[in-house]
Length: 293
Image (cartoon, one colour):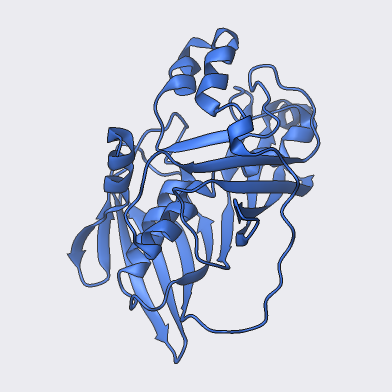
């Protein structure tokens, strides 16, 4: 296991404070505030630690209320809302500096036999046929401002291989959809709960940016304010986050400074393992200035 992957797993391994109360550290990933996927992943870890192991998470619905401080730890307060015959529900509050920055409701469900159908996986090249994000970053580095260059090539806990890569520093208008293969950058422990928490973390990558593609804009541009507002995730089937997964996303609408994006996550065999939806702020400050005259 690489050092960066171990550091990532340490990030998800929350400190126990007392019953239903946990604390997690923060990481600077180069954004303006704590990465939304970090809060999602840690909050789901906190919730799973209050639920029996035979009830894996089946869904979560979350709201990002305030930007997270990358220099401060985050406290997660779990409310045990209900344990039913086959479902459990947990509400999680994330707190920094005495303020709630995040709220999540998560559901857990025992394994059952039932009807089966799923969407088909898009026909895309295999990950072995594609170039990884770090190699692409090295190709784009001359186009990047100095402050972003370290982000392009630094080691990551995940490997990403976009099907149709685009240089973020030479943005062009693109269709409102994209597909990216991803996996953890090494072998993870055989813990099904952990793999779902890792997927929750990774599901915030390459999602909201789908809604800015038709406009030739992205979060790296100084006059763009991009931030997650909410996040929903449904787990359908068992998964391994250290095997290649295809994240196919689309954005059906953008309006009023907000964009919505949806995602389907498939394993290599074409099995649909999760569905994601998110609305986010995609504010172009140039347009805001124009609207004010």
